[in-house]
Amino acid sequence: MLLVFLCIAILAGLLIYGLLTYNDHKNVRQRYFAELKMAENRLAAARKDFELLDKPLQGLISKQFGNRMAENVKTETISTGMPSELLLVSWGEPAQVSYATDEMNKEVWYYDPFTTPEKETAYRTEITIEQNRVSTWKDRN
Image 1 (tube, one colour):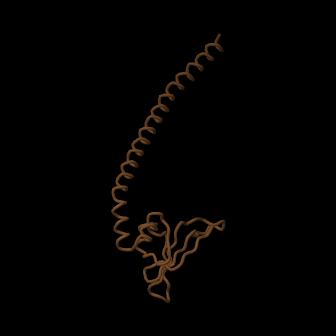
Image 2 (cartoon, rainbow, N blue to C red; image 1 turned 120 degrees about the vertical axis):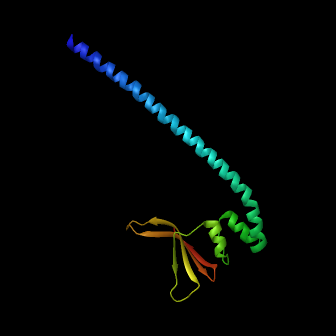
């Protein structure tokens, strides 16, 4: 009889625990979906703001630097002769910059860092800037 009572008490305790944790999980889930919805709304607003700025920006770039450079910025591609300012607009700040010691106007901009098997930092793209314009670049796979 004591064993039956003990089993019933344990099952009742498990049932109560399950009900209590179900509500906790339900609340966590509701908060998660509420935060996700807020993030989606912020993203939609940012996308709308971007679209309002993108066309005038493309027009200004096209007017000052030409259609090819405007297209490069829009498609996030680079080309020889591209001004470093447009590279910043298109790709953002580099992860690292190195300056040539022998030339004042030569820099190498490094993008897309990764860790090698030897635990060193390397970069997938290196872009050489001379006289504030893209002169060469190389990509690593």
